[in-house]
Image (cartoon, rainbow, N blue to C red):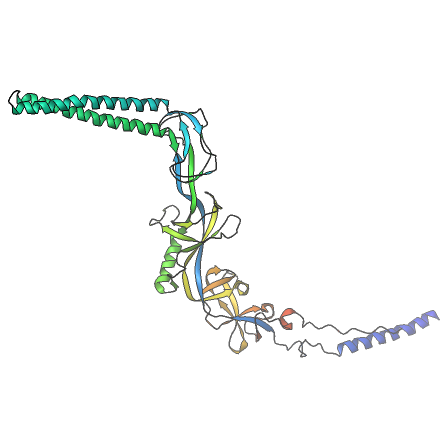
Length: 406
């Protein structure tokens, strides 16, 4: 009897399931717009190309260097008695850095002065003798030869005085050289000698090095190919130079942060390096706070000129084909999708500057690319306006079935 009852229950359950299935299949699925899902036209967000005036920049790597560097060396020999500066401090031109033992040079100076005094004393009788002999010659008491000898002796005595004066000056200079002074203003580094060390005149190793840190040089290199390309575009009128933005330079420090002060282009070398094929550029930056130090790695952003009527396409809209060529999808006549191959000049921020492939007024697809293919008709909305078709909210939910009857 239980088997018979079970056989009667099975057909009843099948009938209930079949009824529920027919009820679900009888309602067509609709999109958010109320139309049929299969016939809905996909929506795409587009941006319309408009010509812009763009400042053309070039980012180049380089190193910082001081504008002035002086290696301090002694000009006389002797024992260092004092060091009169702090390592790493700022010094001014003329400040005394080292004191060399001046005893021997002081004595040489005193000796030279004494020799000068003796020469001046010897010149007095020679001058008086020449004057007397000249008077005696007028009276015809002595011969002309004796007068000539007296005049020659006077000249020799006067020449001896000049030689002694030069010796005194030299001794005075050597005595002053025992005080080693700073040749330039700047920041001095570590000292290579200590008190008590013996130094020699014009020795090879410097006692210390002074570097002027304000302003600071940044030397970068530009390839000669880029330089030729820039000049060619300027000749065609695609890039214009001049005005307040010419030769302005910005700087990115080692940590990627932007340097607050703006620099200028100092000079461009006239010779191409045969090994690297590049031209050296020197830029000058103010460095009042000494934030930049010599030898730092930086990136200089040079403003080359202004490109009038440039077309910039967002990098988000550009894809690559199988050969790696840049391609964008456009909305053309009749709102039909078409693919367009591009020629890209350079990256400017988050956009590509296009040299060929686009024109003003072209509508480039930014969003909705996954729903379209070339030749398909689309509905166009401006980029930035969120619509259900682009945000994915048009997916309809299947109707929920009721609970099975017990």
